[in-house]
Structures are given as C-alpha cells and as structure tokens.
Length: 157
Image 1 (spheres, rainbow, N blue to C red):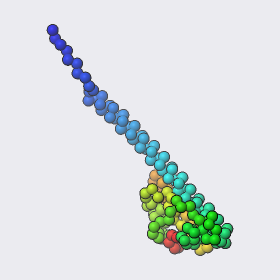
Image 2 (image 1 turned 180 degrees about the vertical axis):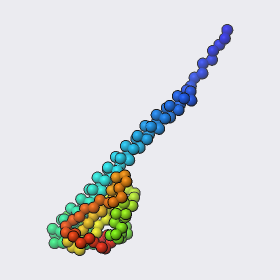
Image 3 (image 1 turned 120 degrees about the horizontal axis):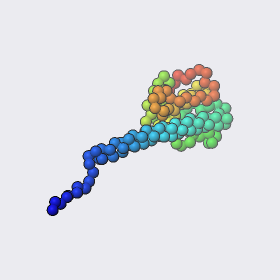
Image 4 (image 1 turned 90 degrees about the vertical axis):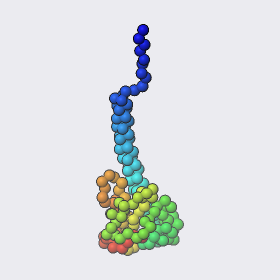
C-alpha cells in the first residue's frame, strides 16, 4: 500500500501573483491619495488668500487704507472685525518680492496651506501669494487686492 502525502500551502507562483496584485493596488492608492491631498491643500490655500483679502477689505473700510504692516493685519486697526483669522500664518522671516514664487512654493509642513506671503503696494493695495500644491507647479498663486499698479519692492509684511 502506497500512502500519498499531500502538501499544504501555496506555490511560489501563487505567492508572487498575490504580491504583484497588492503592489498594483498600493500604487493606485498612493496616486489617488496624493491627488486628493494636493486638491485639499489648494482649497485651504485659496481660503487663506480669501481670508487675508476679506480682512484687508474690512480694515480698509474701517480705517480708510489697507494694512501695511503685520501688526495692522493682526490687530484689525480700529475695527476688531478686520482682524485676520488665527489660523492664517505669515512667514517667520521676510521674503523679498523678487523671490516670492520660489519662497511660496518652498513652504512645507502642515502650516504651508495656511501661510500667505503679503506684499504691500503702499496704502492702496497689496498682493497675496500662496503655494500651489498641484504637481509640477513652479509659480505660486497670486491674488491682488486694491490698486497695485506698481509692483511692491519690499519684503513680506
């Protein structure tokens, strides 16, 4: 009588097929995740620019001119409603106007979508730059407030 011994388990080919399928699913998930994250960060950056713009418009209505310093943005001037929301950040160090796109695109970390680079054009207006999180983007997103016909030459507020 010959007894047959049955081996239990998987062959190497079956294991390789499972590993390849898992790798493909992981790659697709990663691509989807990065796309969703970039869109969410762009939405947050747009909201940041809008918050700066809205606060400056209220400030201008209450004070007769746009804020020209970081302190004016943060205090709201004579109208506390014109105060910037607490989640909006300014860069920790001054960034020259010539380097605005590079500096905005170099922002990293969780505060990057909430950080705005603001350049005053005197008391008549200013420009806001926020990072563009789209893949391959080299220039920051720009929003102009008021009359900014002459480009600012100073550093961020």
